Image (cartoon, rainbow, N blue to C red; front, side, top):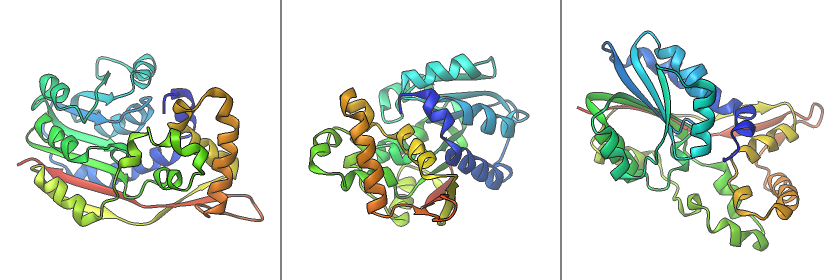
Length: 267
């Protein structure tokens, strides 16, 4: 996920999930004047700027987007940075950085399609809790099952030596009950947690593969001369494991996915 231009062209599903979560929850949150708000995993900044900010602009003083990728943050600031909206590099898993810069600094924390990439979810939730003011709220939308991590498990042996260095490969799958306990143990009171199977339709298989590549960190691990062969392998494995449905008449490619949204408060 180090190419902002590619990501921003292929994040339709991320945009839709952010809109759905905000439409369903923004008016259920308690608002005061001049709030300071954080968006974790802002990526190239388009979701923060074009989707989150319009929901918040009459409610807040400042919106800060953070991402652990410096490339993403620099791109976001160049396109969307302003006095009301700033982007900074931050790893939410790093307690020292979160505490030293942002302890009790925010009224609200949002995160869209980021939490399933986070390896240390327990510490990350503790860090979010410490960054919130008393009475502050979080709205976290993520995938209960990460399809790309599942795909890595099926890769042939020649690719496994590159996959093993990807942090998310050590990530466990968690049930909703396990996730609920994580949030509660971090100090949050859960107001609502919901999940349901959804579908996203791509116009063709090639467009779907572009979306996969936009979030696949394998390309950062692989030598450049292996990129094309790896792309073919990904294409073949997705078909072999039937990870999507392809309409034989139109070529439309349908992805089933399982998002989960958590709305919680720090009492």
